[in-house]
Length: 205
Length: 205
Image 1 (cartoon, rainbow over the protein chains, first blue to last red):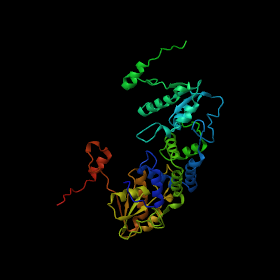
Image 2: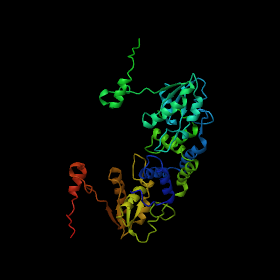
Image 3: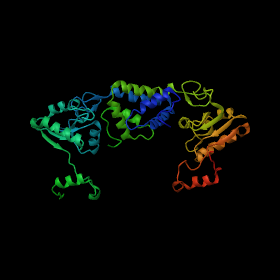
Image 4: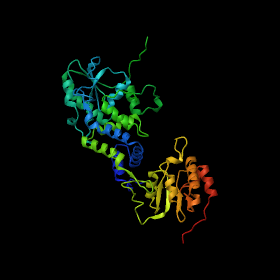
């Protein structure tokens, strides 16, 4: 079936067009999903639509860290047991959820909402860098946990220049071979950096 | 991120749960899609939700052939230039669109709405077989274009038994090697059937 196929119903066509506007969903998949929904009872379709519709007004952003939230403060910033002097800077909400899922981090976050990307037209003023700079002060550690590509490095460097005089400590994620990785299959850039950034051998006693 | 991750917002969680109820969409993909929608302007989210919501009431089914339609009669059944004495029986709406996209068929359709499948609890009474039997009469050709698996064959056979005494002609799709297929890579069942069902060699003069 070609994407330009004539749809037998305008309502079906509009639903397929809406669904295929999602990233990574082609017109064939969109048709399959729309026909799946069409086979569901009406109340299930309404429930689905209402859940999506509610994204527009039901989701708020934390005033401190820019994380999606149910109110003005997210559950992480509201948690007094967390270390509010350690701030992990990430690109997106998804990164917060990935780090939270590790269970290894007890600090708080700062969600930039993107990274500096001239190609995509994203400049520093589109990101919550100003708000981050206000959180930087002596005694605070800021962990730059941005992507390892050129845009991520550029953004990390830009942020570093904005906060270096605040007196805060700035760190970044450890990079190297993954735990359990075999040297044979590692890319040479990662392997080379892993040798240069070698760590003292550690024995638990 | 594990599927059981704590979502930072209830509205986000509900949208992810709704999206991940779609076939072939896992919780990671659903989160990615929900966050994509969340980044869109509110009116775009509302448009998306409304297009899906409208599936529940905006789509009708043709009274003749059971195809999805904008009214009581689909555009194919309403088209007087089509051959209304040739009826192609298919499992689903998608099959009609696939055949229409070939541009090779000028007859009409009959959409069963499924195939007989004891495992899925689909019996003959769940399908529009009774309505099809009413369309079968002398002078009509019914083309059984159902899947080539056991359930499709079972359904074809069941339909054949329901319509064989009506005096209509019953045919089925040609099956064999695909055009351009290489013998080396064909499955042996298809190759064997292609030899048994061999056709007279045809030369255009």
